Every structure is written in C-alpha cells, then in structure tokens.
Image (cartoon, rainbow, N blue to C red; front, side, top):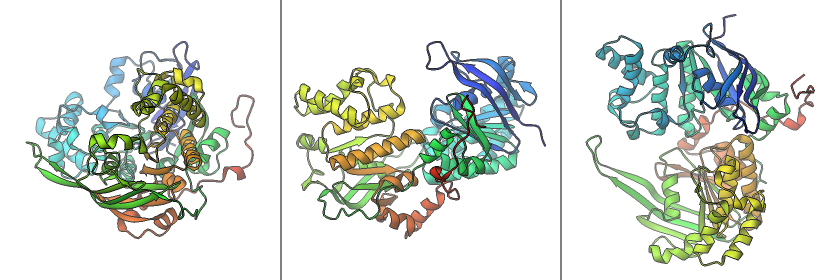
Length: 553
C-alpha cells in the first residue's frame, strides 16, 4: 500500500473564548491516498472548511491548532514556517474555492492570472508560460483557449470561471487538491462537467482530492471514501458505497434521510381550483451594445412564454443558467418590463401597468431569493423589516406587528426574534424569516427563486416542508425555480422546462421525469449526479450501536 499524500492525526483547532463550543475541530483523523477522492460531508459549522483551511495554512488568526499533526509529504504542516507553507501552496497543494469570483482578480486577464503561478514558482520564459497556460485551458475543456486567455473574469460564465480556478489549481501539478463546495452554485450540466473533469484530472495527475460538500448526490457521483463530521468531530467514515447505502451513525442517517425525494401525494386534483396566475405571449429581448472586448448582440431572454397556475399548486421552473428563468421572474414581479405579452393575476393584466398604477398589485406576487444573507438589512431588526411591506400599503403598525408575531410562529421561530438582528440567526433561520417577510403582505403568488440551493440538506428539508405546509394552509400559488431535480420532484405538482428563453417541455412531475420527450430535458436528467445511488430507507436499517461518547461501536 502506498503512503498517503495527506495524513491528519488527532487534529484539534480551538475556537475563541465565548464561542458555542470550545473546538472548531476536535481529535480529527483522516487520510487521503494518491488518486483517491475523499468527501467530507456535514452541516454548516461541522468543521469541514476549517479542516481544509488548516491544511492549506489559511486559518483566520482567531483560530488556533492546539494539538495533532497535519502530515503532507512527510512534513508536519502545523510546525512548518509560514514561508515554507506558502511555497507549498500552488506548487504541491492547491485549493478550489466555492465562489470563483472571490479567487479571481477582476482587473487582470485570465492568462495573466494563470501565468502568475508559473512566474512565482518556475523559471519558464514568457513564451513557455503562455504555452503552458493555453494547454491548461484546453485540459479543463474550455472552448477557444486563445480567446479565454485574453478575457477578463466578468466576461465569462460561472462554469467557465470555475474551470479557470481549477486550471490555476492544476498549473504546477499539485499532489493534493482541496475542493471546497466547488459545484454548489452551478447548474446541472455545468456541475456534471466539473465533476467529470475532476475525476479525469485525478487520474491524469495522480493527485489526491479532498472534496468538501453538503450534496449527497455529488458524494455518490465522485467519492471513493466519505467522512461525516458533526460539530468538529468525525462521527463516521468509510468507503462511499458503505456509508451511503448502510449508514451506521444516527447523524449520518439523519442527513441521508433529508435528501429530497418525491413525497407529495400523486395525482392531486387541482382542476377545480381557480387559476391565479396566467402568463400569455410574454417576450423579453435585450440589445447589448458592443465594446472593445465583444461585439454587439441581441439576446432573446424570453420568447412567447405561456402557462397558468392554480390556487394551491406548485409549478416548478427548471433549466440551466441562461435559460431565461431569472428574466421570467423579473418580468413577473415587474423588475423588468416585458416587451409584449400579458401577466394576469386573478383576472387583472399587470404587464402594461405604469409604475404608479402597479403599486397596489405589488403585494400580489412576492419572492424569496436564493441568498438569505444578502436578502436582509443587517442594520435593521427583523420586526422592522417584516413590517416595512404592509405599512407601505397603509396598514396600521399594531395590526402589522400582530401578524408578524403570528407568522414567526408559523415559520417556527419565537416572536421575540422580531427584536433581534439578522446576524443573530443561522442561514436556515434567515431563510425562514425571508419567507415570513414575503407572506406579510398576504400575496396570492409566492416565487421561490433557488430558495434552498445554498442550505444544508437537513435545513433544506425543513424549509421545503415549511413551504409545503404554508402553501396548503394559506392556499398559496407557488412558482418554484430550481436546478435541483430532486428538490423539484419533492415539492412541485407540474414542471416547465426552459431552454434559451423558450419552454421546451411541460407536464406533471411524473410525466416530465418519467417520460421526457424533449432532448434538452433528457440531457438535464442525464446530468443529475448520483443517479446510480438509491437513497436507502433509513427506517429499515438496524438500530445504531453507540458507545457512551456517541461513537460507533
């Protein structure tokens, strides 16, 4: 057996005094072998990213490794001088971050940023650096490498930027590659391409990969071994097939049981429910001026969009980035004016209304955005933010606050939370607050725009259950925009599939997923990671056997 590339032994990283627990990571032990992909899974705060940052020498100053070893190529990284550790980064170990724009300098071209790696760590000439860079861009399957080389990050798609970050990580052929949630914000097709690329690169470069994620479908697709973390400790680890199909620890079982699956009663008859929203012939075209970097172009973001939704129904809208989902939503809530077409809300066409005439109808369609952190004002209390909408429509504050307290109970938060600020809540709690805020004006239609994509799988389960309960309790009409097909299958009654601004397929969930007719729908379904993995029935597994400390026996 070959020696591991990375060996972490009894690592403990202390949290600052006053934190919710003494250690960010406690007594952690794991290994990564050459050509092995080890996935670390767990909820936010479990210590996944801290483990990665400790290995890379990128821990914030407030966090301190107090014991243990992190052995890489025979050297303990915890005792290595900072300058020596820095020399290893990029050359022998590299990291792929979740958000590629945070890792790329917007002021430099892609070529300059990749070549900087060679300039710092090698003696290659300018011509050699350019040749190596173009080869890397080709290796990560970017189209037209010379054009990408001359491009700036903002001129590229999210998937292209992520491939560039991967190219930078691979520039000097590292022995260890750490990927921290690299596919979270990507659509299915791009995600599938990135995962396939990482598996290929693992073989070509003989690298070990430490892959941090909360997506069990991704784990099923890519992992050789799985490490499950909870509150800084490893509760279970083993071969991927064993952990995913026969989980032993209660926490692992809880996470896997939270993986979305079809749960709503099939064949629910909503045909007698009144139609709340009707979109007919909606078109939106953008004319983009040319610059010195790109020619002028015309983008048909929405073409002849037509659909209706009944009270109590959830309509899912799926498609890749650039398919027109976001533009459609903007037209529905009138952040953008459609070029033509109608948007009927209970018999009133609001598409052509002026801003002044539209004001009374603003409350009819509300939206919950993807990012619960960016959706709330950090300087205002939760109560003030919930009250803002109804008071703008002339409702007395006393009545508004009574409704706010009731909605806090509905979203399973204490009414006292109204006096607190957003930074005092977790991501899942903030998303529940955003749902409550949307419901404050008693809308007829609720739009959930990737509302659970950034949440841990267990929190995601809670929010999805909450949305279903609120829909049934209040008779809401819901538009659910997502790129996660498992989530769509769990919460939606019908689906429309969008491609290049057009609806290419529509039908019930069972029709679209079971017998897809359009080639694009078939492509999306084929790109779903972890298709070979059948989520186990947790209730049928034998009882967990734990010792006095909660560890597996």
